[in-house]
Length: 89
Image (tube, rainbow, N blue to C red; front, top):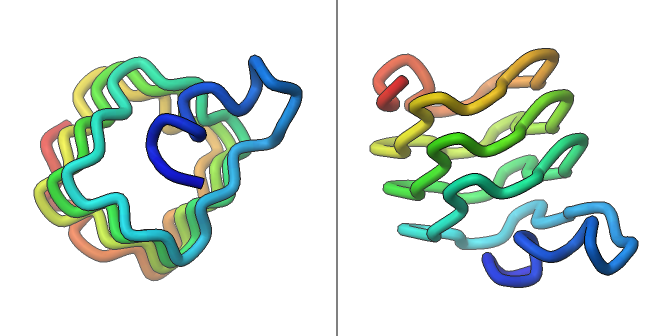
């Protein structure tokens, strides 16, 4: 799924899945990505402000330079995620 498809996944009755996708610089501001599979996704410089990422699978994702300010990360799996500690929170 690309960024636009991810933003509209739940509205279309689909679970957001973008495993191994290149979402560099994607605008996902306020996106509902609850329980999304974003494993190994490249989210470098992505705008994830206010995104709902609760219980999302971010295993091995690259979050270098991502903006996670006000994102709901409760229960998200960040095992092996790159750049999370440096991402804007």
